[in-house]
Length: 582
Image (cartoon, rainbow, N blue to C red; front, top):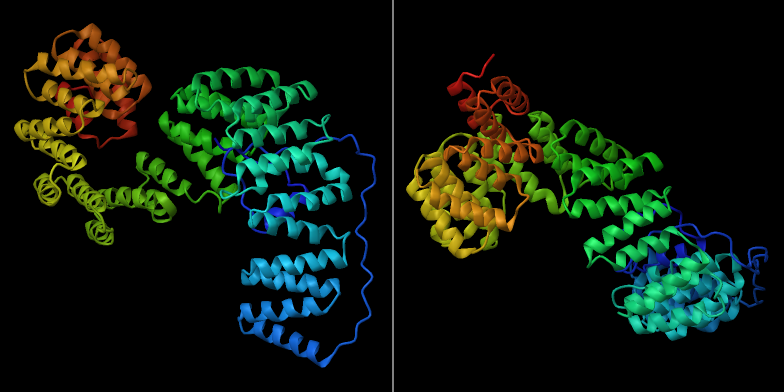
């Protein structure tokens, strides 16, 4: 799990990170401004302006200066780096060494940068900037032992930075860093700061990164003694429980009681609920995070996505739109989800705008939805042009393109053409499960039970134990045939695999209706509808209520569903057939 970082980075660490060191991928605790430290009253050591040597500018040095600068202007960074490296060797001036270091870094010449930076430190040993750059270079070279004296010197020069630096020390390591070496360095840097919770926190992260979880937890226990209910420690302990979701959730529930003003902990608890599909509780936790930190980006986004799951589209639109307005560059992936919301609300122009603006890994999904929206708007040529641009560089890409084109013709109600597209794709890639599943749906729409059943049976052979495949076959048999006992066998297998899936609960409820077991059907369909107020589920529930004589309830359910999707074919057919219109 990722943690949102809201506080500003302390000065010492920020420059080191800016020099190209990426944060440790795992684990990464939330950033928190450190509180006062034992040496808070100790004055910071001011950076001493070096005493620059008196040195004549020879013709040779002048020539090298010119060569270095002209090479830089012309983009020849390697020549520039070499010229400045030679200047640094011939001069004891800290300014020359600094410039040589900067040019070598820009040129990607790590060894030259290390040599020049060492000369810079020799000329200006009290320069924090020189030490910071040296640390970044040594870590990049995986020379952590050599970095230690420079880090210790920095901490001596800036005692107020000790606590915040230790809190975020793990952010210096990248994916190539030797974890055992990082642990050793952390132990050396934390020595002498036993009374600082940040020191024990740094050790906890280092131990966990070195796969020493028990030692990590021991250090967190020490943190809890020194600073009870400290947010970074609570969040990190929860992260260490990510492979035990139930235990993690129980810990977070306890943690939010211990630290009730922590928006970060509320967000973490909300994520845990969301992963368990406990959406109402997740929504409540995100709402609490918003109360504690109005405008917090993570809770805005999280609550918005949960609202989509609960089909609360007005709420989702408001929350996700607020997130995009707050941080447009960070939320480009939300364009896809805002497109989904607009599509569900049948705001077709808005759906087009959001889907067309989607970027990154969700772009292909947005394009598939956009084809469907174009089809609903009658923009078939635009949909075909978009499909033509889709990649076909792999079997998966070709299958996805065929599925998208079939979706176009399905929306246009040209079922024969949709079936043909999928059939052609299956000739090129026989037994592709996704293509078989989609073709079975088209065959069902064509009232061709034989072909729908054949494709679904083959799908189940290819993906045995797949709940959705079992559900699709069971529902098709229940809806299109009198083989209800056979349908029951498939649906009972599916519900055993996914007992809380509203789609499967709906299928089982519809089977009970077809079996004449109306009371059971109503109970199941009400449960499914409460979990997922989908128009087709609503149509099934309304029909059962109607047959039970509860006609006012049936009209209420169907009317609400029509407001969500007045064009849904199953719902419209049900309302017209039964005469549910008031």
